[in-house]
Image: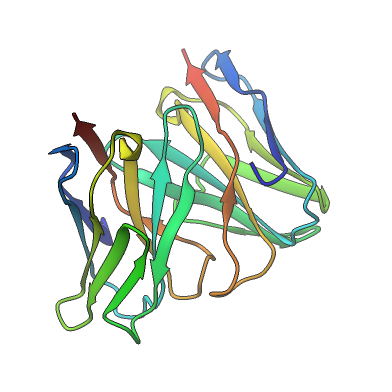
Length: 112
Length: 114
């Protein structure tokens, strides 16, 4: 049973556009929601994370929006660049970086 | 890559043979994790360790065992490899549990069981 559902599976966005990836979770005990970025041949790397006491967190061009009542969170990449082309994973846990439950991943391609 | 070395990086093995993957860290981090990555499943936790000789099972632990005799090394063993264990395996480390530290991932080991 997939506890964290991620969509879309793949996404193509034009350079300068907004990339949006969505995740939904089931376990109401989750209280930490990170996003990881993975380039081919590399391990995932933490991009940005949020806790449910805030509805939005922004770091540079990357924003997490969090909707606790809907049990959904999303990643927005503003002014998307070709260098953002990667696979993105949402994740969740009920105690920080310990025992993360990952979504299935979104392959993002930014085209010129 | 946060001082994490996984070895080997690639391995092809036959069904039924034992396989050991190694994760070595130079960060002196207490917590270590093994995940497997498969298309359509994301990453799933296999086993984790809170310290030397202190390990526990994750979501997909069947068919795997781990050992941690030193802070810096976390070994993952497939006692008798099966084709369903063909995957990319990632080791991760973190200095602490909780929200103020990050889990760092190694570069992965691609294992093919034929």
